[in-house]
Amino acid sequence: MFRKTILLIGFSGVLAAAQMPQIVKQGQKYTLMVDGKPFIVLGGQVNNSSGWPGRMQEIWPVFKALNANTAEIPVYWEVVEPKPGEFHFEAVDQIVRDARTQRLHVVFLWFATWKNGAMDYAPSWVKGDPVKYPRMIDSGGQQVRVLSPHSENTRSADQGAFVAFMRHLKEVDGDAHTVIMVQVENEPGSLFTDRDHSPASNKLFEGPAPAALTTALKRPAGTWSEVFGAEADESFAAWHVARYINEIAAAGKKEYPLPLYVNVWLREQKNFMRPGENYPSGGGTANMLDIWKASAPAIDVIAPDNYVTDYMNYRAVCESYHRPDNPLLIPETGGTGGYPRYMFYAIADFDTLGFSPFGIDRIAGGALPAAAGAAAGQSMMDLVRPLIDNYRLLGPAVDKIAELQGTGKLRSAVEEDQLTERLLVFTNYEVLAQFGPTRTSYGGTFASGTAKTTGRAMVAELAPDEFLLIGFDSRIRFEPRRGSKLKNSQFVWVEEGRYEDGEWKTTRRLNGDETFFGVSLPSQGGMLRAKLMSY
Ligand code: DGJ
Image (cartoon, rainbow, N blue to C red; front, side):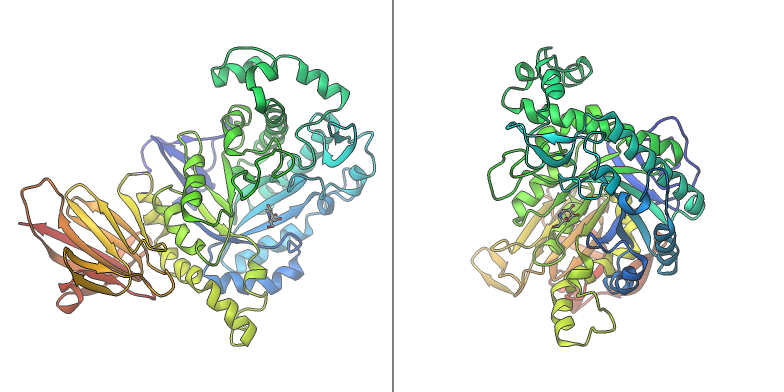
């Protein structure tokens, strides 16, 4: 299905080589292509100070233990360019070599002008020269610990380093494509102030909002305050931060056109929603997404760091970043508790290009699998077990699942507290996923939920009478879709199996007790294909 004309999104000047990682768009469907095949990042992000080859030696086994296919690892401007114009990529090179040995892909995270709405990864020669590389000024006239997006000096310094980095990546990885994406900056925007209140920025702020922006947003012309009202300061910040990053990204892409994304510190948290206080002002938050899409065409994806803890709001975040002009990608999230379940929503309902819990070294205690038997390690393993199981089950099938994403044929059925059944309606069949023990009472057979809320499944309609079922702790039953004259359904056959290189391999046929009451996806996970008929 990818043989047809495909549209390369993002930077348009360079047509990538055949096997170059890229994000393609066909109709409304986005697919991350890696090694020429659809791919989903089943990843993990290491802690902030773990992007060192020595430290990574301790963490690589964790990725193996997780069954991850991708490692997200920071690259630090302060380390890459300790003196202006003097570049060091030894750590990058070693990490790329080691990732190949581990048979893992890498997403590098460019920690530079911005890190968590501050400037902490700027080299000391930037930190030490606030005249040349100015900080933002808050509304009280005080400097804050954030570089100003209005400084040409700072932008061009960051850009020079990023260009050198991308050029170097092409040299060392342009054939192998171990590195599949790069995150430009980290949670950009400003903590401590809603925008730069320096005299020069104030003057800009009092002027008109740029015509390019108002036209793109289909809003009437006017000053920032006239056009954006209460969100004027934040919108001004978003436009300038996005354009600053766009210039850096476009220059980097010219060197080596890898997919590029920017991650977002969300505003959807349990607190006030005040930009510059509760989250960085000017980042690609949901309310600023239109501005970001209009200002940063060289950025392929604006990607939410989705740490929202309840499933409704987790889904709402996924939904707001899953747009015709922006695929969903979750570069940071949790790895324990509800998150392994939420992964099923993200993949099946919102077509995410990737899912990567943050702090992998911490999650797994940094000592796996050698210490997997140790008491402390053991409990950590228990906590991440559902994630490990997800990655083990889905890993070999990511190309097939990515192919099904965005077609409207793939849906999640996930257990939540008091939500012990999910009913999905497809073309000819209704599919009921039930979680935990069942009891028969008036009106049918009902499920009471699993002990640890571990029911999670994906259902894909491969043909109107054929389904693929993937998941854990679920019993799946079928009925003819309501409205048809048919009253009963029956399995023609059910196969248990797995995907290998996109091909279905049957391990056995299920029948008898294994299909009489519907089919089951066991606790350790399973993949089934079922052909149905109705009468
Ligand atoms: C989000 C940031 O992007 C990460 O680098 C890290 O600081 C985490 N927060 C910590 O929770």
